[in-house]
Amino acid sequence: MKKEMFISDSDLRALAQELLTAGTAVIAPVQKKLPLGERIEYARVQSPDQLVFNQAVSANSLKEFIMPPTVAILCWKQRKAEVELQEIPRDPTPQVVIGAHPCDAAALAVVDRVMDWDYHDELWFDRRNQTTILSLACTAGDGTCFCTAVGLAPDSSRGADILLLPTANGFRAEVMTDKGEKLVKAHIPRFKDLENQQPLPALEAAKKKIAANLRMDSKAIQGLLEKGFEHELWKTLGLACHGCGGCAQVCPTCHCFDIVDEPEGVDQGTRRRNWDTCQTAKFTLHGSGHNPRADQNCRIRQRLMHKFFIYPEKFQEVLCTGCGRCARVCPGGMDLPEVLKMLTAKAAL
Amino acid sequence: MNIYQPHLMRVEEIIDETPDTRTMRLRFKDPRVASSFSFKAGQFGEYSVFGTGECTFCIASSPTRKDYIECSYKKVGKATTGLRDLNVGDDMGFRGPYGNHFPLTLMEGKNVVFIAGGIGLAPVRCVIWNVLDLREKFKDVTIIYGARSVSDLCYKRELEDWATRRDVKLWQTVDPGGETPAWKGEIGFVPTIVEKAAPRAENTFAIVCGPPIMIKFTLPVLGKLGFTDDHIYTTLENRMKCGLGKCGRCNIGKVYVCKDGPVFNAAQIKTLPQEF
Image 1: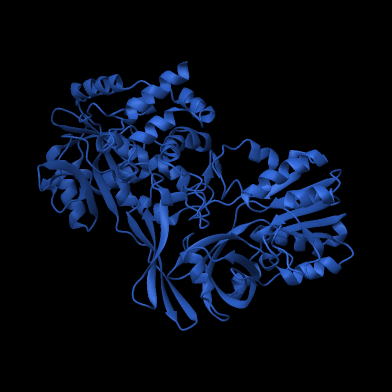
Image 2 (image 1 turned 90 degrees about the vertical axis):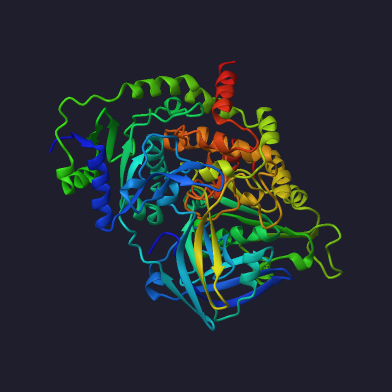
């Protein structure tokens, strides 16, 4: 089978319809109406007409479709002294993402590392393995995007099963994985010979624009963070940070979680894994009342450390794909690209 | 079964160590799990009551004692209150063992000094019984244990046992003001008693566990006695949820307490940032 093919916009939508008809969940960027205005969000679509491509960076990431904000681990039933545990059935619906931003597809591949580090996390991989990702090379980047600074690009294929590159009449489809090949084979009439379809010049322009947003030296930052535990910068950033955790909520790579029991009545309930964030005080609070990260300075330091020092030490890559969402939502005006610029400058001193 | 699924355990025995500290002996309900379960001294687990959630403690019993595990805990929050409300015969959850362990093989043929304060005796007790159950493999065994007051001393029955054993040198102490008229042990903080006991550093491993303030003042005393940092071991505690290196909260700098620890030697601890 050819690894590079062509698919028109209408064939891509027809493919989405075929998937929906077969009972596969289709996730794609859609225009979402809000009480005030509207925005682009990834959502499970009901009709191929909802799909929108390359209008803006979607407000959410793909994280919630692999690691939902809350997921059941087990259910228990108490019968006097005895407890009966019920496992949660592990058969997630197959899902196909059509039009993933390359930063979001890459984020899943980055988080795979920690989820398969020694202990294989089934709660993550069950959904991950059932998900096929069609990344769409991105021309929607804005002034906050910085994927090129963390080793990616608007047309990066990392984490993609199929990479779509926009052309004048549709998309050039590059098959990257077996999962991608399986999908193409199942919908082969939708794919045509590539012929002379060239990626749009807008893609090169997008690349240049994003590269101009931020130039950073990850290695130098890693070195600075290793030595800079007591750096005065943490005080400045700690003052700006409200500790709301919004950055972690929208981050495609933030994966920290809590495990809590939720009783349902008196004798049964569900143990759940919920999203959590290192930006709250309770995250590290000991039962004794002692808190190793007692103030916001420590917590914002932890977030940067985890992404640009700890993760590279453990997995040889940063825990950030440059999507820029944290900077877009921060009520304290904290701008990660600006912070990284500052760190790069300090590391050069 | 996913990695967060606990084993069911039955509470077999409850011992009230102090007014706020309790030890529970637990047995696996599934005989296949019971026979295949093994762990090493220093490893920890996630103990849970269904409805109040999981909490992290070391396994306080020795790996040489098969068929059961024990945990000792202080009632401080929601999860430990849930544990406290259990009765003998009740079911609860356990998953583990997780983390690294004390270097028992390195310690063979050497003297061992155990230094503990308060509930910090729990992880140390696991190693003490491991060593005592294989007594001929080790040389001199010294135990220095202190608590705020006489009533705060944990494992009182075992302290009595160790006090009468000829192959163990036991020093017991309580903080000044914590003694009773009948108290025959030492009076003073643990670091002071370590100085007084002055265990030989040559060919000796020290295992230290207790409140941070006790550890802080004990390490210089051991240094003065000639102990090198790679012969002093302790176990760290941080809030944990998964115990598996995923949930992202127990790290100290780049070190994950749940996977790289919880057991560290003093040389390793000195390289860590002050965030524990």
